[in-house]
Length: 100
Picture (cartoon, rainbow, N blue to C red):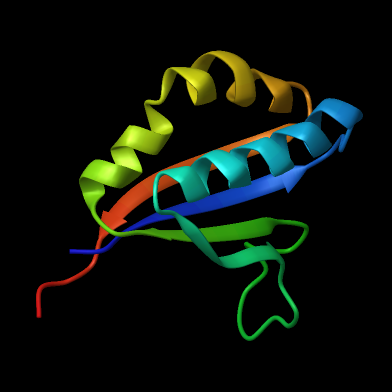
């Protein structure tokens, strides 16, 4: 069953390490079967302002196991994740697709 990462981010300082983070995390996610469905700022507000000045990321993985293997990967935890330090505020959550 597919699993998804939802990230809502407020990028305040897109420094050079943040750019490295973006590229390297995408490469590692792909190695774990992940693909981006959404990655970027909104194109239009429909209702409310919670997502103003935010970047939304939705990534799909083949299973929750593969999603967890990505976020718990020692390379991500120890090398890639720290690259985004000081670049903004991040909120991440994992979701499973509904059955059927």
